Amino acid sequence: MGFKKDMVWGGATASYQIEGAAFEDGKGLNVWDICCEKPGFVRDGDTGIEACDHYHRYKEDVALMKQLGFNAYRFSLSWARILPDGTGKVNEAGLDFYDKLVDELLSAGIEPYVTLFHWDYPYELYKKGGWLNKDSSDWFAEYTKVVVDRLSDRVTHWMTLNEPQLFINTGHADGVHAPGLKLDRGQILIAGHNALLAHGKACQVIRKYSKKPCEIGFAPAIGVVCPATTDEKDIEAAKKAMFEASIFENATWSVAYWMEPVMNGRYPEESIKANGKWWPDFPEEDMKIIHQPIDFCGMNSYFGSYVKAADNELGYEFCKFSSGYPRTEMDWEITPEILYYGPKFLYERYKKPILITENGMAGMDFVHLDGKVHDPQRIDFLHRYLKEYKKAADDGVDIKGYLQWSLMDNFEWAEGYRKRFGLIYVDYETKERILKDSAYWYADVIKNNGENL
Ligand code: GCO
Image (cartoon, rainbow, N blue to C red; front, side, top):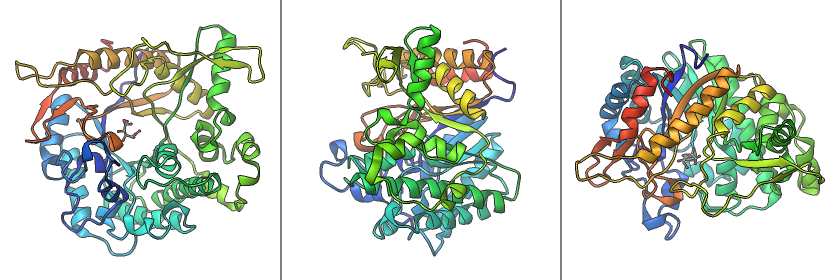
């Protein structure tokens, strides 16, 4: 059976990670601009001030995507580039940039998949309390309206939030991502709830004001749990573990905490119970706002875990990875089966087409003596993962597409520029782009719609 004829094939990026031009053309500050200045916050003191200079080189980048045969490109908008204060005055130059990018993509035959928020939160709003402020979802709705008014005559695919569990937790609980806070559990639950509300209100705004019929989703991080064997008992155990909110002490790390409100209009009972006195008293109407119709189920996934059924309270136990287990430069285990079981379990539960919004690996990539970037590991990685994904399609899972992370090497948040995730190598001194071997390989997969996997 394989992938459908209209399979979405492309790559993904995020504004702060590639654009650069951090202080140009009236862009406002965001929390990453601020945190990058704090000594020790980002490895090597790296910042996104220049990044890949995509802001000035977007035409070259779109031409490269066209060369690779992409039919889609996922990118995010910098909220503070569009609204320097987060709300209020619009920065026309910022909107113009995205306007031109969208036109360039469409004229190259590439469908824009726009993420509204990929972590670069406006600093002016952060100073008003950010996601803790009860108005934060309205701020997001206001920003969404500005964007939709301007781009929805051409953009028809939207994602609201990227990996809310990451920006809420790494940014607000662990303090290792911007804004670098270490809030308590009660505050985290409020921030999480406001982010969910922001998602819901953005969906409402897009549906109401879009100039064309459109599709909406979001891009959560999906921690896939795979069964250790194909034994039915292990498969059931894996499913249970994947959607169980209680396996994390902090509920907002779980898949269920984000997916259940969005997809089923409820918080998982276990999250509420496990948080006891910490659980805030949210107004009931909020859930109606959060629970908006969604057109596809986004999935950002890089590695997963394995469980086997067990005779204990949980009914399963996690398998341990050995120290010699294959891993990427991020030290993430290589677990291709997540692209089989993840889509399968999500589709069974939520019945929405699956779009891989991110998947890929960081490698030890460098320019070889012949001037090329040979990255056989990435080819092997993508080959293994995509084979599993295709198996899910063969099994009847409604697969919408695959957006590889990332189009090009970029600013990997607190890790700076050392971790290279790109299909395209970026020389950060000269900003020269070089297609890695994996880019050519992926272009061939796209050309064959995955038939050659
Ligand atoms: C994330 C983001 C990306 C990352 C990628 C690799 O999940 O952290 O969506 O911005 O760069 O996932 O870590």
